[in-house]
Amino acid sequence: MKNVCARCPKVMSTSCCEVKPHERLATITWADVERVRAATGLDATEFTEWEWLDADQAHAWLELHPAYRGYLDVAPRRLSLRAVGGRCTLLGDHGCSLEPDARPTPCRIYPFDVETGMLQVERFGDLDEARRLVVKGAAHACLAVEESRSLRELYRAFGTTASRVRDLAAKLRAEVSEHVKRERAARR
Ligand code: SF4
Ligand code: SF4
Image (tube, rainbow, N blue to C red; front, top):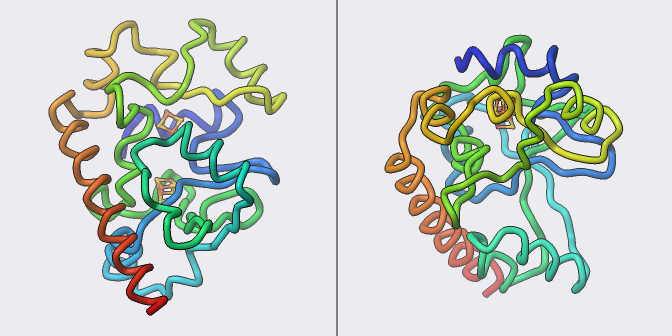
């Protein structure tokens, strides 16, 4: 368990495992589904949900998430982690209930960015300001990002390295590719 993630909901009022009513949790692939099912014995319907996108939404989403290129080619729908009461169904009282290796790949990458190796969230540099914007629903912020003074320190906070994040990014791209193949086969 990442210590900083355990403190995050209290300090920031929410965490990346929680969403507002108009938001979705991480987009996942069938590889993530299989991994979580193997670890928990849950049926996919208990921890996932589909979201259909119109053309504008699909375009905007792919602009923001280029690592998912191709994901919507078969059908404009995203498989996401299911939120109940604004919380991921896999979120326990002290953070994610899954062992790190069993977590969906995008969860393991966050808050690092797949394409650039930088960050998916802005750094405000001021905890009060970050929290204020998060409470308002005006921004996403990450406690670890706010508390780390450099990227190197941030990697350390998560017990990872730039090279491991790059490996996870490659894994995500491969899993997206397999996801698309499976979606295509299901529609034949
Ligand atoms: S990754 Fe960042 S936003 Fe998510 S729980 Fe950990 S500290 Fe909070
Ligand atoms: S699977 Fe775990 S890390 Fe990912 S959103 Fe759910 S609780 Fe958070």
